[in-house]
Length: 288
Image (cartoon, rainbow, N blue to C red; front, side, top):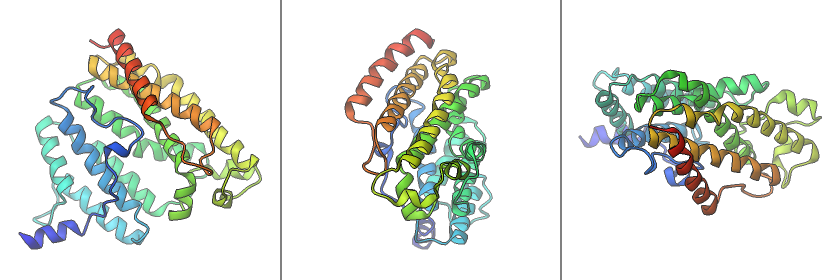
C-alpha cells in the first residue's frame, strides 16, 4: 500500500494553487450542491496535470510520461498500476454521472502540447490550443447539468476568451520560467519585435500593440460568449455563467488599462462581488 502511494505521488508535482487562486469561480455556491463535488473533481485533475506541464524541473519526455499515466488512469487502462488520486476521483465521478472521459482527455492533450510546444504561429493556432485547454471545461460543466450541446456555441468562445486573458496576465512569467509564449508569432513579427520583448520590466509600445490586438480578439469572442446565460436552462448555471461573463469583461478592461509586465493585473474582491450580484440578477432573468 505504501509503495503504491509513493509511486502515485511521484506522478504529481503540486504547485500549491487551488480554486481560490483562480480568476473565475470553480464550482461556486451558485451551482447546484449535488454537482459541486463533480466540478471539484474535474478541477482537481485539471490542476494536477497542468502543474505537471508547467513544472520547469521536468523534461518534456518526463512530462509526457506522467500525463500519459493520468490519461490511462481516467480511461481505466492502468492494468493494475498505481492510479493518481485525482484521476481515481475523476473516474469515480464519471461513473457516478454517466459522462464519458472525453473532456478530461482533451485537457490532458492540451497539457501534453504545453510540454512540447513553446510558440504559436498565429491567432488560429492559439485558438486550436484553446479548444483543447479551455473549451472542454465549459463543455464538461454544461454536460454535467444536462444542457443541450447547442450551448457549446456560446460556451466555447467564453472559455477561450478566459484562456487568452489568463495568457496575457502571465505572459512574462510564462516566458521567463518556461520559455513558453502564447502571443502569436506573426503579430510579434508585424510589430517588429521578438519574444524577448516579454523580458522587460514594462511593455514597449510595440508589445502593447500586440497585447491590445489579443484583447481585440477577446472582444470578438465575447460577443457570442455573452449569449450563454440566456441559452442555458438551469437557473443556477445561468447565474454562474452570467457572473463569469462579467468577470471576463472586467478583466479585459483591466488588461487594457494595465501592463502585465509591470505588475500583476488581476481582479479584486469588489470585482468578484459586483460580478456576482450582477450574475445573480442576470441569471434570474434567463434560467429556469
